[in-house]
Image (tube, rainbow, N blue to C red; front, top):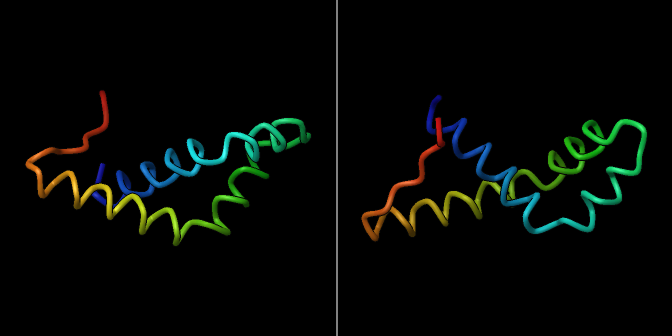
Length: 69
């Protein structure tokens, strides 16, 4: 996994954590995964920036974000 993959997946996790109400509404739709992906794509630049900021802040403290195996 590359750093870009980690950032994108982290951004998606942050999007899901900040928007449980939207996720719940999309879950009611027939193709909820596609609806969630489309909504995330609309906000992706914002969440990529937020996750990179979080990653950089933690890195400056000597902490590392990794994906569990």
